[in-house]
Image (cartoon, rainbow, N blue to C red):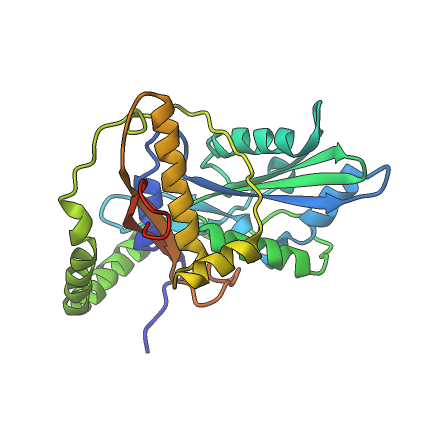
Length: 316
């Protein structure tokens, strides 16, 4: 029987989210929920109700603790000073209101780095987005969870019963340097035992990526550093029609979306006087068998797919 450490260490996949958090925008994921409200919604009551449900997801009351050199990956520890008010806020929707304004606020929140001295999430209730509606914007750092895990958190909060707690986390002793070091040594030994399996997986991954590894695409204005600003837009289409059209060609909805995305990028570049006839698009995937708020962190990756942008649509 494997002895479990008295603390929760982040996984190697989670560590990638920390190491990769060096670009112009932080490694954060978000969700926007539309809420039906009455004609005079009580924002404070809604936030208090949400705060009383946070106990359903313990990770929302934990902060990330950096460890000394040689003591392995960072660990999650209970935030003894946890206060929901530092994470939950409310504001009226500015003019002109509506979905576009909400998405603009969500994009700003998504690109604002979360402070590391507290649990890595925030939520804002935006009231009066339209008559009798409000929006709740949730932002998580990617080290806390991936997109599917974020949906599991929201589902757990929606299903939880309110708990009359003061909201502050319990004070638990932090792991000692000796505990961390011994656990790190044990983890390295376990990694060595799994080395043959890891080598086989690496070989399989290399084979999967080989068709794209030597591909050099034409330079374009899309391949350049980006700034911190982001925009979010919504395109609506008939899912049943897309699914039916894809099935006729033995394809999936994802195939149809990638085909449309490549064609759109091609038209965008044509408008800039550039011509790129194929793109390598990084397609995210999840290895989760089920969504569970008790098992967060990252269980996802990306697969590069070469997608032609010109020619017959059926062939593409």
